[in-house]
Image (cartoon, rainbow, N blue to C red; front, side):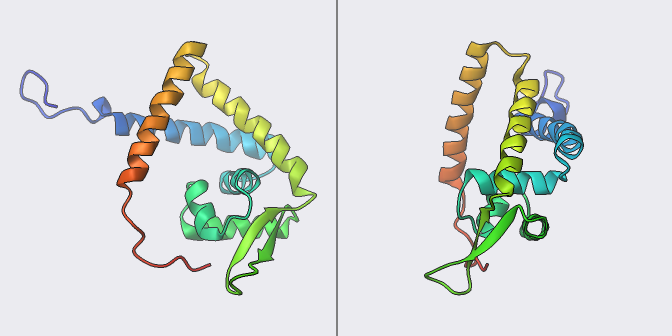
Length: 160
């Protein structure tokens, strides 16, 4: 991917760099919005959005779905438990595992948060037409499926 003069490629020309930059900019805007409007830190907001959207998550699953490392996911989940928004439910099949679920108090907070997520989504994609947004989502679905197919198997058994 060198330019015509044989120079090294500019990092900004790569899709992955641009995607990471968009992610960082979105995280900054999301963090401010979620804290101001929802009273939750970004990691707590991501965790709550995931717990409400993917029922009965373990901490390892939460880390993946919320794009957090396991330590961040564990701390965010515990903060949500301490706030009474999430509860830990013991697995009926494995006494060592717990699942994270919304509480009755957590449901309306999750619903408000999802409206904020929708607001952020509209802000990021608002420069695209409806047809372009649809096309972008279809392309991302293909890329996600491709990335998931290439994902290496876990190196260790999940421990929750």
